[in-house]
Length: 246
Image (cartoon, rainbow, N blue to C red; front, side):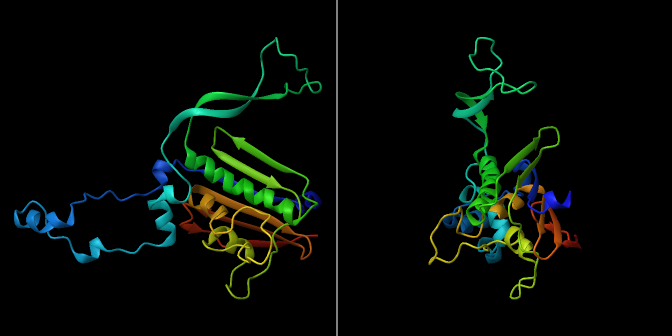
């Protein structure tokens, strides 16, 4: 069991409803040239300067302005390519083997979806596919979707993330790359760009827009298994669990 896990990097994502996870504070906006007049008339109290000019954390900025990072968060209805399994009897395809469904078909259909949700899924999928560029022993990427629970699990084989403390940041490498914005391994512009993402957001966006985010990896060279979870849009973090394994 451990020998198989040694080649797997697992992400467990429970995507929150974007409309509930954004935590947007709704504010009545009055043009600046009308503020003094409105206050004088007693219809609006004078706005403190601190309420006009504010600073937010990087994570709150992602939540307040999701369209800048993941695209639209409203449901759209448009033509989109989808993969469907044929159930029509007049299909010429034969079953791949006993008990397996017919081959999937790529079809163009009217579809309702949230672009931002697709982007959140794409970020973690690209992260898994990048492992193929770094490690040619990566021979499988598997996606499991539990519709009833809303849990999406993305798994890839190949070399895991090093289970070691980052000497400069004081946290494990996995926590740095999955739980802290503006971090990653693609900032060296002297190297050829062969992987996705270079701005330090990537998989962290999946974490921020998830009610639960879990990362598991096994570092075979050090004989260590690593697991860590974040909850509530990355606002709650469990300490990492590192276990020695044979």
